[in-house]
Length: 282
Image 1 (cartoon, one colour):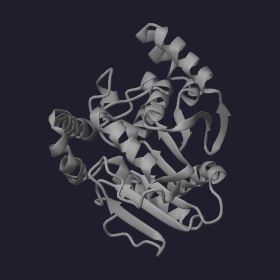
Image 2 (image 1 turned 30 degrees about the horizontal axis):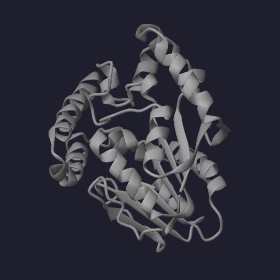
Image 3 (image 1 turned 180 degrees about the horizontal axis):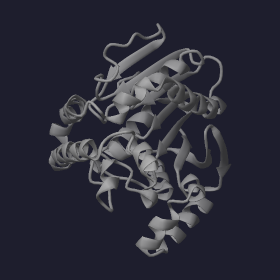
């Protein structure tokens, strides 16, 4: 049991986890309280500060496990390949250490990586068809109608709820007609998924809002997307399921008493079924 808890915490001590929680919750509160104009610069400030003050953050330490990172990237490449064709332009929003975006340079004519911070990647070298672009958290500073496939993984939940729709519309504007946006985000019904999962019942860290598939599908349609699809699976092996089925399952899960739902959602099968993987077309 101790070994399992150690692995689940990323090998960090309880003191390090508590330190991370206190710092991240304080930074998240700053974002939640900030006005729209302040948030345009605050996203970058907050994430730069987080990575400086929490050097044991898993996004920083995970880079040393090259084999695990390579497997995770390979699974995502396998999934995204179905949406690509020769000469595609690929956009990744919130690329983290850019490992996936760099891998996509071998499959796309041009790769854009848009993030609010370059703290993780500032010393990295990139291929010639790769461009890292800093954003204010809402804007997507690439040419309009230039992107064939946009992708984000564990991004939507980090946006202030007031900014999420604006970013969706900007991603929509960046896509060519028929282009697709693939979004992976944790389901709030199995959460919280940020550092506050160790202490709280709902996300209080830098997951400013977690969503269900049904909630996100409605937002995508309101942003102008059509043909919203849901995928279920793990490790690159995904199958498409009807959106109505996913929404029905979420409704049934939400009707369960919270204590029972939290127990059920710990089962691997249910966590797989309730992962939010959406693909929407312009």
